[in-house]
Length: 153
Image (tube, rainbow, N blue to C red; front, side):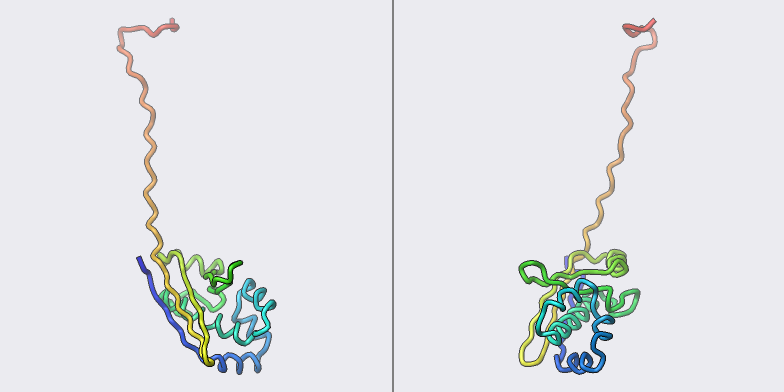
């Protein structure tokens, strides 16, 4: 079942302007360590930042929290797997909030065209934990009181 859907549209020029003004300070405030590691490998840093910013916005909209209610901008993020597919990641605090809300798996897609960045996030509802089965105590074999067990005196 779908927990929530979030979308964000962003002008890449906005992020370029902020990055030009604040540089690494902006990067440190925005990105999680895994995202910074991936950014270091890219040539188009402004595009990378704009896509991550839009993704974070879409993610918190799908969670229903925005950047409030215990979720900060570095509590959610997007990293690419070995195939280049974007995957949602969380800080420990972000993961805790996600679990408390009942948010399950998250999916995100990113695209850019003509200076616009679009990010869409879809979250599943976390599966309800199955109740643990109660262990039954082994019943002792019943022995008639007038019978003696073999091997006992």
